[in-house]
Amino acid sequence: MKLEKAAAQLEALGNPTRLQLYRILVRAGDDGLAVGSVQGRLDIPSSTLSHHLKRLVDTGLVTQERQATTLICRANYPGMNALIGYLADECCADAVCAPAVGKALA
Amino acid sequence: MKLEKAAAQLEALGNPTRLQLYRILVRAGDDGLAVGSVQGRLDIPSSTLSHHLKRLVDTGLVTQERQATTLICRANYPGMNALIGYLADECCADAVCAPAVGKALA
DNA sequence: ATGCTATTTCCATAATTTTCGAAATTGGGT
DNA sequence: ACCCAATTTCGAAAATTATGGAAATAGCAT
Image 1 (cartoon, each protein chain N blue to C red):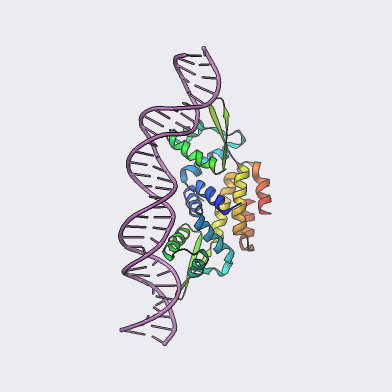
Image 2: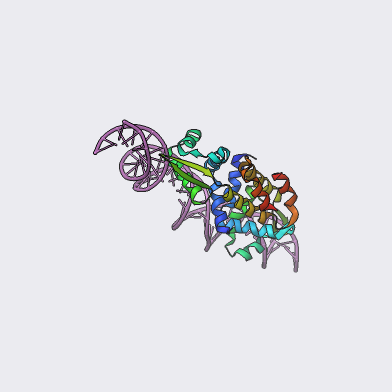
């Protein structure tokens, strides 16, 4: 993973609204959620939501799939895993924190 | 970890210069690095560096300790672990990506 | 006290991000 | 062809962030 890409993804997640949005999609699991459903849960204007969503899609953290008029959004797990892997690599280049990370994921 | 705090940390890391800076500190290990040493490696004006550094300190990702006139900076591993843990929690609330994360950290 | 080096704060500017109403678009259903 | 619901694009204002030169501060050494 390139530093630039990691930074873009971190920035995408580094906004409370988008992190909340991402969280909702993660918890929705493989079924994903329609944009409209997400909007119902976040209670923000559709244009604002669309911008945030686009940011997550552009950075590769979320995927979208059309089903008729609704657009299903899904958290892109591999994308997130790559990012976590990058952070873990950076953090655990030396062994100091490896045990703690292991514990966090246990 | 609160969502707000996680978002602030992610945003702090979500800037190429700061991510690079953080990376340098992580790789410096427990000895840390003086601000001046970091500046030598990044080649940016000291005031700009100071701003970025402050952001990392404020969000709890970096700690500082005075040694005479120089200020030693260190990556705060527990802080990063908490963040990775938060992301892993969000991501792995369902089991879909747990194996991949395990692999990334192996 | 004075000087020296390291670092921060002050200040201003440019750039980017956030927000969202209104209009446009997309994709069926009738 | 027309309509309806879902979603995006446009356009524009407000807020925040990024950047860096110049001045201020901190902490020793002499």
